[in-house]
Length: 112
Image (cartoon, rainbow, N blue to C red):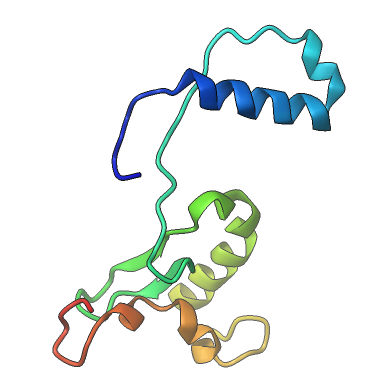
């Protein structure tokens, strides 16, 4: 879908109808404006959490798609563990290697 920044009224109507099915009281609410935004994601649909191997001191916490709010506590715990150099909940700090930024790099440091 790319970087289309237009608002699609048909999509807003579908989302509003779905919300009303879940929460019937919303039928009495008047919509005064709608917002939209990008949901950044990674090719493997997993967030990137951890230090950037190319730039010392840079720590990533991004690419959560639409789950950023729900994943925020865990992401915060992982970032804190990295910053303090401590294990996360008693686990080896490398235990979450599937989320580290270097999973997208080849040995030459070029994105795959």
